[in-house]
Image (tube, rainbow, N blue to C red):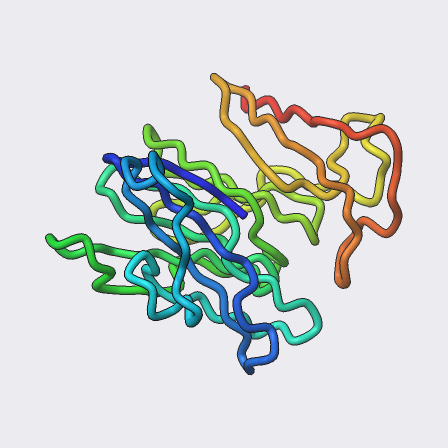
Length: 204
């Protein structure tokens, strides 16, 4: 689902691995960039045993088993992962050998219904979260607390409102929001609309 590069590696989130397990499983893979110059990489049949597999993100929402999604890094090199259906943000910390030494839920809130795309503002340490289900952009602060930056009801996006946001990007003092408009269970967004839209949230 998400792809991000850092220090010669590419990280990829796999949102659905075993949807029949309870809880369902998802996870994150890491590849050296120079590995990708040859033949396509064939993963192990059991992906969790593949040497490229970092760790598992469990999904407790049985109605919609969509897990590991957005990815971002902080300045210290910790990796943050959005768990779409559970509405949580996880953090991987790494040891000196690059292995995951801790996998914890860093942020959750009753009002954060999903965690799709993530964007880290390294200057402030704030993670902007596209909360698709809630038609919102949430802010995860460095201490793990969550506040809402913006939210709106069901709209087609022509009024500038969010129509199921899936990705966020900070550009100067503007948060640019890509709207997915893909109604799934639990969403404020109830129907498909045209056209596809981007929304802008000004921070000043």
